[in-house]
Structure formats: structure tokens, C-alpha cells
Length: 259
Image (tube, rainbow, N blue to C red; front, side):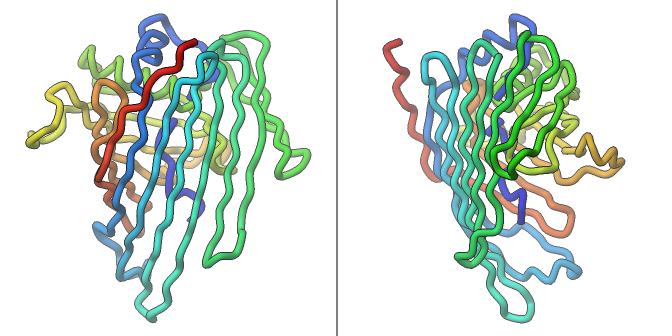
């Protein structure tokens, strides 16, 4: 389970047109708690049950956007085996678009199985970028022109929704897995009517294609209902063999700093 949380809790190191840059400034700092449950699982997966929780925190740090995600997920298999995965991810993105840092830690049944840590830098806001990992040591990755990090990608999706644009396709890097960067193809529609749901909310369906693998099949898919302020009310993750539902239990708006 290397990619339980692929969400965008997505931020960008790269340039966007002025409307999307403005949209990034309109995103609301918040903390949200989600309950995770199994929607369906194919017989080949061997999974018979799933439950868990996710905490997501998004903040304005004056000169940067920061995010923190923590996931605890328990999968139950047909043989009776239970596997508990914990996954944490933190990121920091400079608002000037010139640097980005990330850290990932993952364990399975209490045993550490993966750590990723690194930093991306660039000299020009619309030029290529270089990612240097401290873990794994000495790993290096070149990012092409136009690559986005999660927050700017989210801002671009919300701006597209406001303009009733249906399709957005971008290369995105968040550092959350070694499959990065991804070509993300997004379809933006209005969600089904739901009591209490913001009328301006948009359902964004995203397919994630690893750029380096050049695969014709997505690694995974996400369906997220975003409010205009960037808060996700509902998330659905499809990994092919099984899919998960994430329902917001509590959303707390956080104060902006006095910069």
C-alpha cells in the first residue's frame, strides 16, 4: 500500500497563469478528519474488509503553503489476515515557486517499510526543476517545464471548475511516492445534489499515469468533491483491485497567520 493517499493534498513549485495563482491564495487553511471504508474489492485482491482514518492539515505559512497527512488503514483478507498500514506525509512549498520540500514515512504492522525525503529547486518560476533526495540517498530526478506541485494543481482545478472547463491535464510532482511525477488527467463535473453541499462544489475525477513508466493504464484513480475554498468533502480512491471511500467527519477552518 504505497499510495493510500495520493490526494492533493497536492502544491506547486511551478508557474501558473495569474487566475490560478490567485486561486491558490484563496484556498482556506483547515484541518479535516475522514473515516475510511471499503466500497468494493475484486476477488483477486483477497480483501474482504477495510477501515481506517485520515487526518489532513493545510496551512498558510506566510511565505509558503504547508500540508500534513496521516493515514491509518486496516485491510482484512479472506484468509483472516489483518494488515495495518500507517502513512504520513508532510510538504512545504515556497510561494515564490522556487523550492519545495517533502517527507514520507510508511509502516506495515508496526514495521517501517519506506521513508522518502527530499527537496526540489529551480532558478526560474517557469523553468525545469531538479529533485534531490536525502532518502533514498543520492537519488536525483529532473522535472520538465510546466510540472506542478499539489497546491497549485488544486488551484488550477478549482479555477477550471469556476470557468466550467471540463478537462485538465497536467504533470504533477508531490514526492509522496517513487512513481512521481504523474500525468494527471482530470474530468470536472458537478456532483450529485446533497444536503449541506456547497452549490459551487465540483466533482473532480482524476487518473494518475506515472510519467517515467509511460504506461497507458493509470496507477490509480481518485474522485474528490472540492468546495470552492479547496476543502474536500468526499474522496473516493480506486486502486483497480479495490476502492475506498473517505467521508469527512470534522472540518475545522484554521486562522491565517499575521504575516
